[in-house]
Image (cartoon, rainbow, N blue to C red; front, side, top):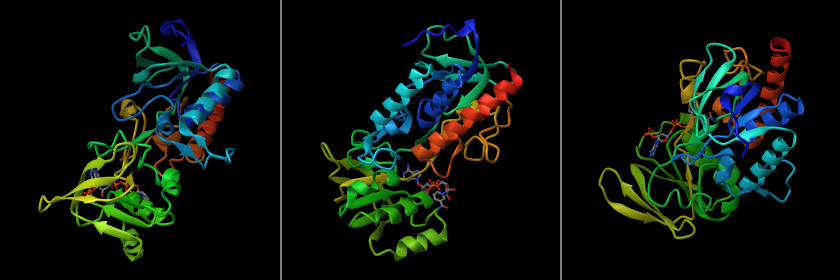
Length: 326
Ligand code: NAP
């Protein structure tokens, strides 16, 4: 792992985050000879880790170019190799504070040798991603990738003719439940209330789908299974009675949170904390700061769209640097 002496230079571009968006931005800025520095992020209790959310998935079959599929961690290793081979410096550590009020920008990190000194950069590409909210119940974390998933688009295909469950009562949960009926035999939506947060049309569509059934006023107490999901221990929140639901898959769709906390008060965020970028660009409200990937995308949230916006951020940053720094 390269050592970075924080104080010794002003970088052209610092990239925060090492998922598909950050690494694509790195490939492009490195090929543009901008010598990017990437701060890859650190593993934390929410499951975030260097490489982003794909590190938590198994087979990926919808990333173009891999007709036989590829495992998430291997895909990210390949992104990384490509970024490094063009001259990206990747350092381990998490950005914990930024000062975007003056240029060069300052980034403080945890986990680097001289963490007290900020890293200085003319421009910044933010690719810190988002994390799916978890239930935090026994068995859930252990069985992620083995029947527990937070992404129906990524993993639905693996549940052909199986009985599965979706937790949540918002648009995501019902959209995922409907999508999953293309594969599964039966989809049970487990929701803690008897009213849905989802839009009426989604509720109506889900209710009309004969493969979907509802377990309302219920919460998952435990994901049961030794090496794969075998069932869920569910509690009726009104009566307190417990039962077992025999399913081989659990999709958690209780919302996402963008990893944007350190930018609060410095960048424009929407009401859910997503960084606001200008239409058809990766520009934020601060000149020289660009955002890409899931930290600014509440709609698509796919690896390939993250990579696409990573490319946009790199091209925007390159253009900005040529005009403002050199
Ligand atoms: P959301 O609207 O915040 O809904 C989250 C759901 O998860 C709620 O029903 C909530 O229950 C439940 N929940 C939260 N924490 C829970 C926990 N610990 N245990 C059990 N259940 C829990 O999130 P979302 O569905 O991801 O949607 C986010 C935004 O994207 C929304 O604005 C949505 O409209 C939008 N979206 C739109 C579309 C579309 O238009 N096609 C598709 C997807 C998402 P409570 O209801 O009891 O709080």
